[in-house]
Length: 169
Image (cartoon, rainbow, N blue to C red; front, side, top):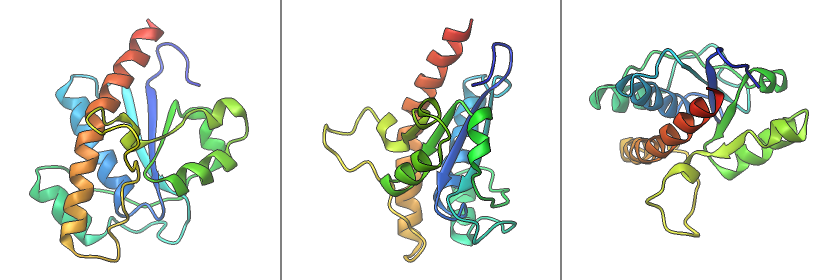
């Protein structure tokens, strides 16, 4: 856990860090900038696996992000268990990532930092599927759906981050 005065750190995690997590990262960066919180929160992303380490985001992710006015600069990397010590919130994009990250967590406190992205979407009905589907094997429409889910959930995530920042003061 970071200390008072240090930035709050949020990491988004999907499978290979080329589709969903870089999309969520860029959407959340934009929400933070709009809210005037960019200097108080650091955002990054990673994958549960290292297959794409060093690669840029998938071209369809880039196209959908840019079409919606977001930045799309990204280099993929794999999440490391040691990162829990420097992250306040680890945001998984589906239940498989949630389970994998909680298994990697060195402590129960670290495991508690892991949340599903769509759990922050207040508009979802109770019992709704909280997974952001992997768009990798489909067409552009899957990437557009992923962006919509990320945008909806990042509003609630922003509220949570505001609360965490206020609790530090």
